[in-house]
Image (tube, rainbow, N blue to C red):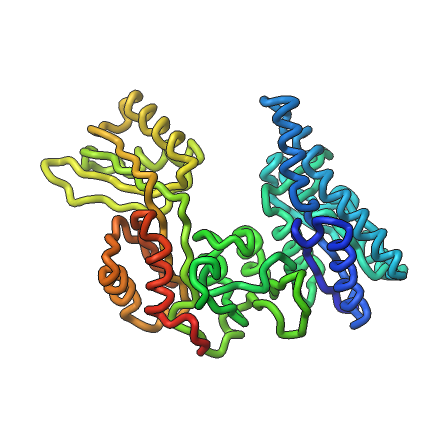
Length: 412
């Protein structure tokens, strides 16, 4: 039998009624002849509750026990989903990560999947089981301890299972009905995309779009797993949602596929740094060691042997970045006059595989922002992306203006 992977997020299994609705969707796929692997998240709000209990009990907690506790939310959902399917006369059973087993690294709360042996689940399919309900987000370390994959890890679990079992497709059920050209809450002209390339989705996910976890898209692209993003609250058809697939499967697409934004950005500038070989390594090495996720980087023209270095990072990492730079300065590794942090900025990005073959995208983007009176602070580009930092108060205006300028409300 062909295998189909179906993943249901927290809002899709938030209560028993929603679990029943999800189970009916699974039943439809079983009736089509699929052996189904269902990956479930914890019921909405449960993981936060469990994390809260851990922090209240032990602020300096043992990460191994943290994983044992927070992974329990998915176990509850898996059991309830299996029971619901059994009540529908669908042969199903629940699986926890260690029973599969989902083999991971030992990095508790941030583990990475290393291997998913298929023998146990395929053996049960051979005995008549039609649905394996697997607790997402969790695995087993080489030491035999429960691990978790980080927030949003159930998406990664689903894609990893689809790759391991060579599934026909991996359907991600969530509270939105697909991937949009931008956030529909910012502009009502936002259009749902029927298809989007892996690379575009990866850029959008990393740039602020919350539809899919970045690691899951990376995994899907590497193993060529077809992903479909669907709403668990709307009627379904074979063409519903958005298909995330290889670029070759998309006949024609707009030059720009989507406009992404992130409001939680900060612009940091080191004033008057020595302009010498190795200075960039001396700055960004300590930032990396401190776990600061640097994105855009710009270096000014040197004057009298000194230069300014600007970079962006998430706002919640500003204090960490400041301490890393102060420590490096105290150690004599770098010398600078001042460090200025601007936490009132937003990142706006235009993404599209069509940029590879068509010029003028940057010019149109900059002209559009200029016409709206939006000043650009920092620019970064890649083959299929142009990102700018602007004052946060202009974020929605910039998104709306760019969406209109590239006519994203129109299908190809």
